[in-house]
Image (cartoon, rainbow, N blue to C red):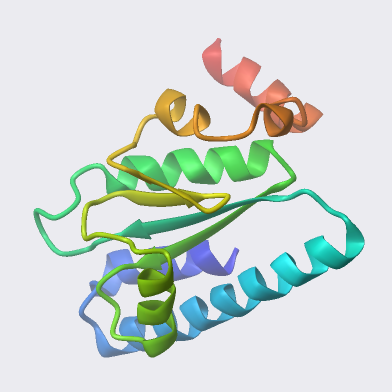
Length: 154
């Protein structure tokens, strides 16, 4: 919900707006904290979530397929309850984000994904992104999302 509000604000005010940049930094820090915490909880509680780190760029011409990839990830996150998606603006000037980029050795090729610690570049359609996900996850789709997907096809 917060991500949708931030996306809406960014589309209205622009990605260079000072308030938008500040909100993106705060949201990115929250996501990084959640990611690190969920990794610890998963290990201690023997959970098997699938983590996706999604890196995009708002710089004109750097990522023509980032919007499409973002929509696909939103759909997949709603469909698969064990999927944890974290989205980051690669060019955001934030130390913690730069560290995350460095640790995962993310190149400035967009869209970029880290799925359970394996990196992929340039994927944007549902089929190609879905192939990066573990088969065990794909069997856990929610009933609501399956119903929505079926009604969308009609």
